[in-house]
Length: 254
Image (cartoon, rainbow, N blue to C red; front, side, top):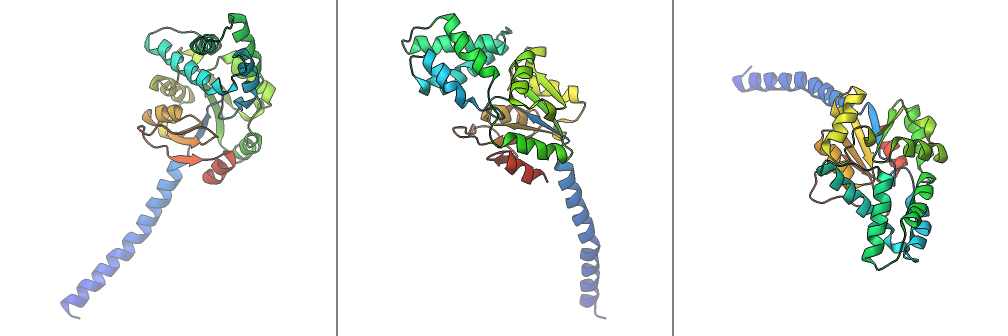
């Protein structure tokens, strides 16, 4: 056999010996990418805020179009609390935010009117149409499901009870326990420590670009649920996955 022929045989043998190893490594990598725990945001991700348009709109003199501005103002000032070392619960911030939106739009509103417009409707939000079926399938697939929310402990407990979601979740976590609002990285680090897992063993599922951005920076896997009207922050790291609803998430994680 010529030298060239011998080299070809050796090269082929090396390739054939390496291929199974590459395949096994790839399979192992795929397996390691699957999260052990799915961490869900609550408001807008699981629960539909559409029903609040009427109550908030009524308090704002019929301006239902101001609901997104109110919600973003509430989120904005929750972070003001965090960076300034202060803390008020999400309900208090929500009332204050509604008063601010009203004032900026020359709408007269009392503190009691703001509270009435927010608290009761917020506690009785319905789940999105895909949520119960999706959670049922994810649970059946063996995933541990937990929630992580900026709402208070009592608030999210009441929300889940009213929405019929209690049985799906192994645990509910509220930033109330550490008084640091998402997307501060410490909020995600705290829940990962509570779960006793590595960050990349968890997947944050949220309909907010700021939430998946924070979780991604904290080392978690992330999935953005593109609910209507929701978009990603273009300057943040991209999430691992983008889905339109929980049925797509189920298909992704099978």
